[in-house]
Length: 370
Image (spheres, rainbow, N blue to C red):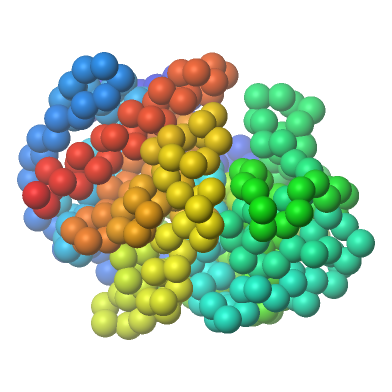
């Protein structure tokens, strides 16, 4: 079953065609496809004042792909017309959750309360001078930032433009961000925090984002190379937009979700289990589900660059602009990947789409594993 493609579906598929600069996280020579036992899926979705069937939900929210993994097996897969299982789909800010997994392989939990300047001395004298690694992970840096992608003059839009135009300067821009509130005392969604966090990760490992991800991609048996958007050509020191420019197949996005269950893959502990547990839970009371600014969502909180749907972190999701989700029910061992191409210009419609997804994705997981 397919639906008519959303008008802008192609802009979120194979983005290296549109980014001036990109690189790849290499896939292994011998990929390991998911075991498959595909079956029909019925999951009534209740929200926005009514109950709809799954196929109507997919259409309403401009879905481009839906992949469901249950206990390590691919049990459901759907693509809109014009998209296939081979296509690398842009995750937007779902990239941040992939970054969190990489940080979990680079730093120990007992290192998180050290200043970011211990790794990146260039941050001294900036808004990040007193910010710890944990505060970067939880977006409680307190820096003076506004995440408004509808305003082309906003700091967030200018940050993304550096990648879309390939003119570099991601890290130079974050050095100019002034301090705001005391670090650790409040939450502000801030892609700049992710850029600084990736800088810390790079200094801790000596690996750029794509190289580090390639090592994880190899261990996971990914089916295709991932695309990583850069702010400049690789031979000119281009830096990854680690807050929003990763593209992977829906099946490979599901591998990242699977790691967030317990950090293991094929009997190997790729990410420490303690890290996964900590990253799935809110760090402070104001980060609990329902406590974030209502303009973001009332359904989720914030962990370490993952969005928990309950205080215990049993259900978490990656969440990217325009409907990119990697939902993980850690108790049921179910991963649901939903990519989308919904319109972004109308903030109210965008919020309605997102809220409906926060209700629908758990319903899908429960339908697969009651």
